[in-house]
Image (tube, one colour):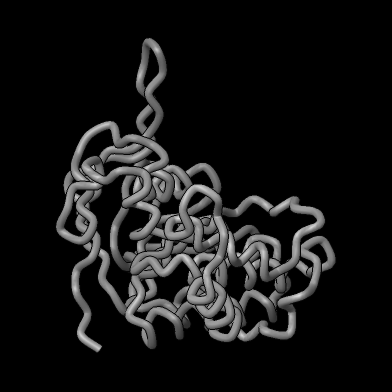
Length: 246
C-alpha cells in the first residue's frame, strides 16, 4: 500500500496560554506523519507528549507554527469536519456504567448519525466490522463496567475504528495494561495501520515494544525538543525507564 503524507508539522510550538503568560512545553517541531505507518512518540512523564497529541487533535491551540491535516490547515476545520478525519483515544479510564460494548462502539458513529444519534443499518454494520477488526465480537453484549483493562482498551480502539477516520491518535494506550496485553494492543495497532492504511500516532513509555512494532519513532525530551528516531547517545535506565543522554 502506498504511503502518503497525511500530517505535516512546521515550526510548531506547543504549550498553554494563560491570561498573562504563555508556558511553552516544546518548540521548533517540524516533521511529517504518513498513512500506513504506526508512529510512536516516546518520552518521560512531563515531557509534553499529551500536550503534543492534544494540539495535533485540535483540542489545544498551538502557540505558533502550522499543522496541516490532509493538505488543509488544522485551524480551518470545523469541529464536525475534524470528527470525520481524526479519531482520538485518550489515556483516561472510561467510567461508564449501564452501557454495552456495542452501544459504546456505536458512539463512534456520532459524526454521521445526526442530532438524535440513531444508528442506521449501515451504522450497525460499521460497528460490527470494528468489533471484528479488533477481535472482540464476543464482547458485543457485555456491560462496559465488567471488562478488564485490556478488553476496555480494545473497545476504545474499536470505537475509533467505527468513527471511520483516516487518522487515529492514542495517548498512552498501554498505560493500564499488563505486559501480554501491551504486546497485543501494540501489535493490533501496527497491523491496523499497515492493512487499512490508517495513520496511527501514539504516545507510550514502552520503549522496547515501540521499537519492535513501530514504523517510526519520535523522541520527546524535557528540554522541549522532538526528533524522529533515537539518537546514538541515548541511554534508558532499565530500572526507572528514564531517558539520559551520554
